[in-house]
Length: 365
Image (cartoon, rainbow, N blue to C red; front, side, top):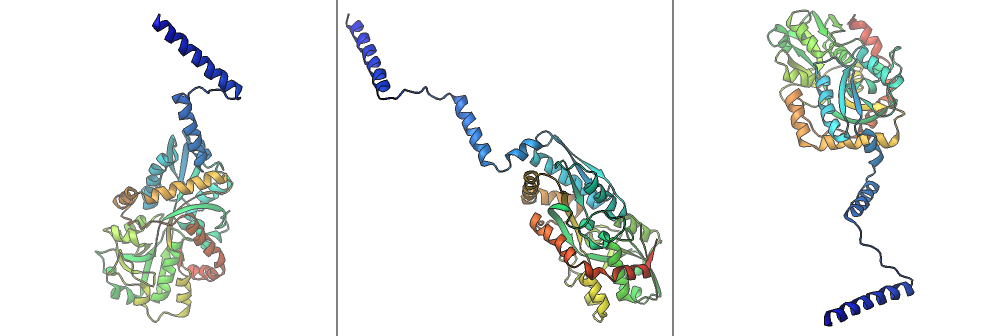
């Protein structure tokens, strides 16, 4: 009887509380389920992520990286390394590399601006022609330096002139006292060729010429080894890591930390004339950059920039780059800094006016 009385009392009190809440216009809400709580947290997280829509777009997508140089060289290796890192950062299903070499990058970059999808599923990793006013002046070129979204720069270094370490031209005095010299270059209209032109102008050798069209600096090194040419106009990092090349001097005002014993062209030719100095002042650097085409939605461009920044901040990227290419990564340049480099070429395009004249004096197709 006592237990029955307690039950009736509990029921009465419970009903009283419910009636009291309803009378005050309040109703007791049911407790949130765990699944509801998780959903609310997920919605808040998505709202706080400025890249949420871009992440959703790239999730499970097949992405293409185009490289304007042929397979096997440092640019190609860089492109494949970037593809590996960007796959995880983008959340993509795959990121594959396609080599579209030829025309000092013109073939690849023409395709990027005129035929590539503009949805953010394509970007390029390679050397500097997109920011090179020399290449932009080529009649076959369909793009200008500012016709891209620049995402970042992996490496920027100066050019050097190199020789076969086992041949007589490894002695700089021997080179400077020569009556004839032949230099290899990758193409007719790229920055390697113009670096060679500037060097030959300083040397003042009576019979001097450049053979363009070797395709890569490695091909030029092989040509030296086989006796086809005497010197190679190459990127200095390539000369440093390649046992078949010995750097003679770099085309810069200050010595490169990676080549501390290699003199600069200003040290070797302190009395160079004003024309040579002008040529060297506007000589493009050897740049490895990441870019995509215009027309890509803004949120995807910003997400690509963010992913590149995250890749550069990863110490493992620097280690992998060093192990695979010999390049010492110094932090890279972000999208804004890389865009400024391209704009600088546009702002000083008139400084290149004399270059074709000098090239025509030396180049042999």
